[in-house]
Image 1 (cartoon, rainbow, N blue to C red):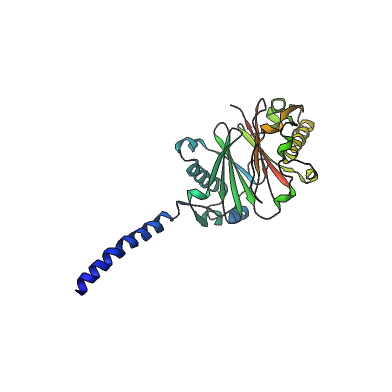
Image 2: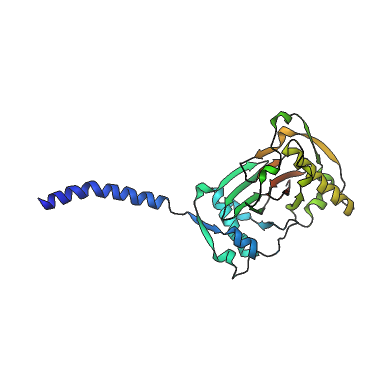
Length: 266
């Protein structure tokens, strides 16, 4: 009788145990990603015009159906190229599930956001075969930037014409280039998209004054054409795909700066 009771008791218990174990396994990490705080300390000098942005050749993009897997592979490639072999950026990583990675199409570019211990890795795939990886920290107040005001959707954004400054903007990188822009003087603007347009004009105007091959001319673009992904107290990512020679991707950062990635058309 005791044995029968035990058998009946276990017959009810074992399925529950298996469900619990199965749930535990499903919550196991899919992969590990570098620790951003340690990468900020150990990474070598960036190869773009932005000290927080690393450009890698990423033809392996096409090997991954799930772009979240591509994002993890790109981070591994970044640390292999730019972190010393004994770097804590390589040695320390954190478990991650696919569900915590966000990938979106913004202005013609695949953009993936990978959270980490001190901020986010934001990956911007260009139109050809390279990827720019932006290291952003959670150490400031993103509310210093104005919000996007949809009442301005039919207004014009005056943006530089990249075809007039193609070589100047790309500046040594064939497919894309990244810059860090100071946006603190434009916080009074009533729309974040105006800040982005103004900082891009500042960039190209500055290049035109130092590079004889770069000309500064602007064109009007409908504000509604700027595609944005905004989040509470995290970087806002916007892209403008309507220029004649490529597209600008803008990423806000907490210290009143803006990361600008210019991707050429193929």
